[in-house]
Image: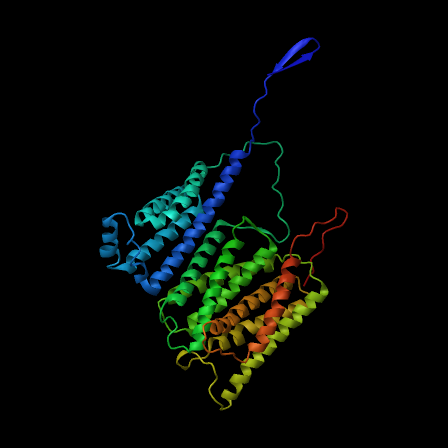
Length: 454
């Protein structure tokens, strides 16, 4: 109570404890972030479990040996492990479904919350070791679900009519709002990549009939692809994607499309073939849609003329250099020389020859020419191309490093030296270009930079 004298009149006021009006919205926002993280985690874990089952379902044979109840152990051994593939794949599908429900939000997310909580409770019946994971997880999941629950499945109230409508704040140049479809499709793509990569890393003969050096390179690329899948999910986690984030995403999609086109055409048929096809379809569609958006509305870049010219010539020289390397192998064969090395399975053309000479190298040369001619869209396309080159040659050099670590034979092709130089150059140029698309605050007296026109 507080008494104040005001002209002889006592005024009594009661001081109430101050409360934050936005505490509940902030709590629900944090719970929503936890829901999206858990959804993405379950998608990835579903892919990991599917990959392990495809490689060797017997890996889970001892999963229930530490259970408190003989019923759980006997049921697992006599029912699940009697036909492990369908049961464990059904479990992986269930994890993916729960992840999608949580990511989608709405009423379905309530089912997702209930599912993951029940899943962790049931997991505790498999032994004390699982309590070390499940108990801390439940301490996070249950409060997050309670905070998120009221906002799920409730239609947003209609806005009250206002005399003056306040427009939403404009997006910065080159930024776009990330849609739910983009988030969900990216998570599905990342799950497929993780599953295919784990199959290649864990199965006994996913790359049969291929030379040992090629198998080592393929498995090193599988490890790199898991990292790329994680990066893709991280890039789309925010509701607004800046220009640099959009371009980085497109570069990673280009890497996946190129890599798994080689898997589809140059790897003997294996159990992961349909997953490879799914990855090619989804990454190709997402890359095409993103490039169309960039072409229609090129983001503004602050790249200097020197950086533009340097990158343009690097791309043109790269295309000419690698075209010359491949033609130095193929032209002598066309004139009656020895068989090209390497070659595809069963004597078919090596997939890299086909993709590079028919699609990739002409496209890289075209982007370099567009840069040198000062086209507005060229900077964005060059960033995508440089990032694709960076990720591809990082994966290619991971093969020799893995061979050295495992005492396997190290096989370096004719592109080893130029690819190493290009790896360093592309890393530097990619970083410079991504920084050039960051929004720069403008002085009120200075107009924004004009876009260059074709």
